[in-house]
Image (cartoon, rainbow, N blue to C red; front, side, top):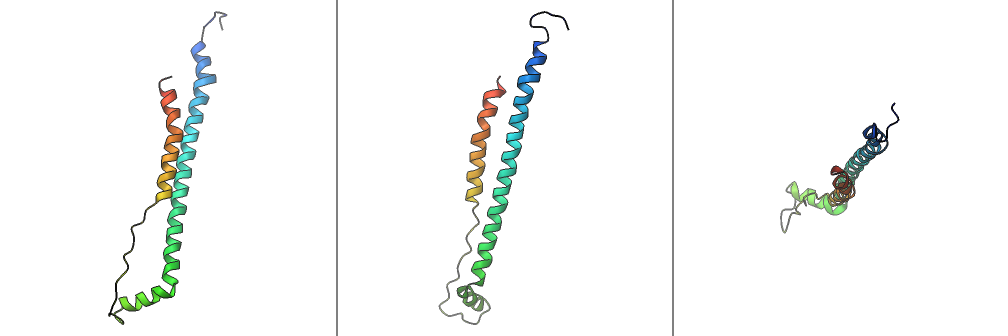
Length: 109
């Protein structure tokens, strides 16, 4: 290695600054993806457990009888609400707002 100032500086810059920096940004991105998917999976499980719990309640037994046609008078069916994964959406946006500035800051560096 010659002893000139600035010789191979690009190598040291990439070795000690950019490589660790982009490794950490990629690792944070992967962790946020894993975390977001875990939150989504948990939220789906909670929604499914809520549905199962509601089906076991006595008021739903009456609704099942009505569905089978045993008590058709004065029946107003309950609509099943569409599933909204609100916490998953919030978690996704929070992850984007956390990781996004890293990319915006260092993409132009």
